[in-house]
Image (cartoon, rainbow, N blue to C red; front, side, top):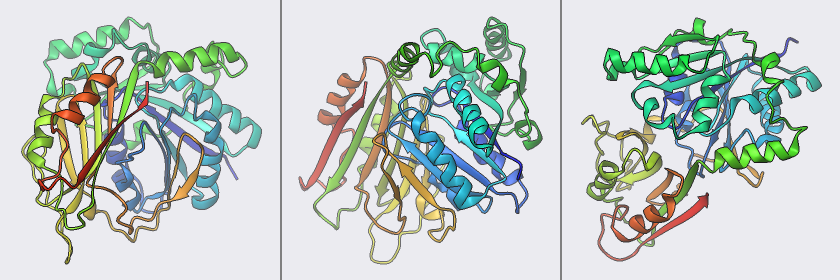
Length: 386
């Protein structure tokens, strides 16, 4: 059998990687088996709705770490699980926003050479035109993501002036790249452009200095880029089984007050007794089942904008297997039918040096609280990466 092509999608936090993949899925033939390997900081994976798609054969989630360094040893096992369980036509690897594409591409190439099962098709980087000028100067990782790629997708260019877009092009030009570029249409790029890139990544990345053979350099790289962000894990639970949900007014105040230069991403699964509004005012109600007082919603916040998506819109009978691997390497099948989540499970990804301040604010300023003022809700905020 020919090797399974692997496409790596990378880009800084909030650039639109998941949106790009979500818009790719409907373009694929119904018989096409796409498997997704998704890497997230924290322990809240909000994009499991991908599992419900008929063309997504399976999802592996590597959580609470970075796939290009401290989780890289688990890449082979995750790919093997998808290969054996799904037998996909293609595997898409969506990295965390702080991942280096070069080391990941080299690991995929190594696994391909040793097993014959995989072939790196190409590396795609998504650049958020609206915000890239803001964090490019402070993020070495963002520069490296743009430099080591086969295709650059310019996203959110519709939200800026033509001058701003041209400035972004000039900054990319400063990297002296010989690489194809394309503008998305609100996060959509034609599948013929994204798939079959057949890039030069494998050959070019072999000269990247931080290889596995250079252990000191590799660990330096790991510490360098992961220290660019800090991560908070937030949970709100209640002893009252009749507790309706989170206080949406307090949560919205938090989302509105989060500075874009201090907080990069907020991802959460929340319970709400009424449909929460996205930042644009859109409301997508969920179906509250008989005997329940609330429904679950997926919160995605980036650079001052957010969306709430009902989790109940995802069929619980999806045939696509979902498994998660934590930083410790443990792997467990996730039963979507079990109501094991508290009122809020949230991951907050922040700029370096901001975690302690925002940990205290979340703990003391009522940003995440129950709508029932009975004192039975328990808030826990932990700093899990710094």
